[in-house]
Image (cartoon, rainbow, N blue to C red; front, side, top):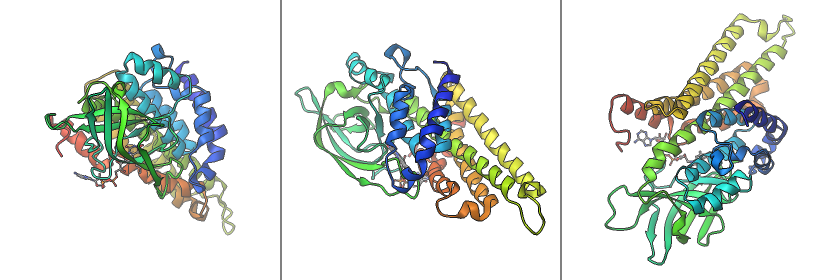
Length: 384
Ligand SMILES: Cc1cc2nc3c(=O)[nH]c(=O)nc-3n(C[C@H](O)[C@H](O)[C@H](O)COP(=O)(O)OP(=O)(O)OC[C@H]3O[C@@H](n4cnc5c(N)ncnc54)[C@H](O)[C@@H]3O)c2cc1C
């Protein structure tokens, strides 16, 4: 499937399924099942699975653009899709033949949703420093104990990519690993849904792992590979999925503002708001903000797909710039729309709440600015 067809398919699902569902997904804090099933039915959930495994075989640019289409209609669904796409890319990166047969094929066939369980209450935004313990029990199994939090698709996915630290006292410091945890594994205990001010449909939940036992085949790559996954797969894919989503929100907010200023006419003057020069100037500035941020994101994502050595700088900055652009554009769109935008239940009301997560979701904007600076200065990216 060529990229234009992929994007057209994403737009169609977004407009026909995600858009009509978005309000109730938000109001009812409901995991967006119809949207996710439509994305499975159209094969879009195989976006980041290699063609050799039956997937669409796309990388960062395609993920950013698909999430932009989805985010325009429903940011919650877009993040649920995005976390699945990142998890799928993680599993695919070093999949063994068993993992190819058991996991990648069913993801490629649209039968399996995965997600990321990296964040923990103790280390917060430093999601790359897990405390969850992994140990081998000597009988062909691995055992996991710890607590994850903010797991998107929590309780709805078929599997979860989990990061861990070795419990072996002889393991070197920072010996982190990734495993895949099937949803029906005994010893997994879900907390209740986290009640965010926005992103209310993503079923963000905590997960207790009490001496959970999984086969050794569920280790992703080798023990100690987690930092490789963080910088080669998780961070690039995660950043473009989030950046695409919130760029979509910014672009939808700009359209809302455009509609509102073109429809709002004052009785005393007979003039439309769109005829006011200050409003025209503000609209032009907002458009330029969205357009240059989109250009940065697409360029960074393409650079990552080409494997350029400095691609991470662009990717770090793209997500930080999208967060600043989206929060600004949604806020200004609301001001330009006056009471129509500010009323409870408006599209902008939902966007304003959803978009705040763009700065918070790790790597946060502050973290990304520091990482960009350190990479630019030739310093190690992780210093804390
Ligand atoms: C809607 C939503 C969905 C999510 N989905 C997932 C998911 O699917 N999987 C997953 O694993 N996680 C997920 N997360 C978790 C997310 O990625 C973050 O890890 C989490 O929000 C961090 O929250 P915290 O409150 O513990 O941050 P804290 O660690 O308390 O940080 C708070 C603030 O302090 C800043 N800060 C922290 N340390 C430093 C420092 N050293 N220097 C400067 N500033 C610093 C941070 O930048 C941040 O702005 C999700 C979060 C949200 C909100």
